[in-house]
Length: 110
Image (cartoon, rainbow, N blue to C red; front, side, top):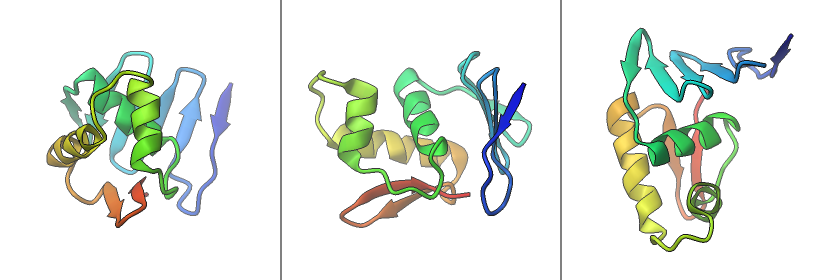
């Protein structure tokens, strides 16, 4: 049974197997695997969690604090840790997937 999330581009699909497809990125939450075009990317757990969190809410601005709480919860690591992981994700995915919204946070671009 598939559940489609409609967007203006109709390019996002989430099914019961936890497979998220956005443009040229496929995120398999069950296997903890990300594919960019046809290349499998190796992401550390925190980068994977951040990517899933942003990609599951495309075009929505998500604050640094919301990302921090989602990934680290009560663990103390510092908010700038989020920025470092976003930078590493951009290096792996390309710069056109995650946009910085000055003084607000980040959003995943469709």
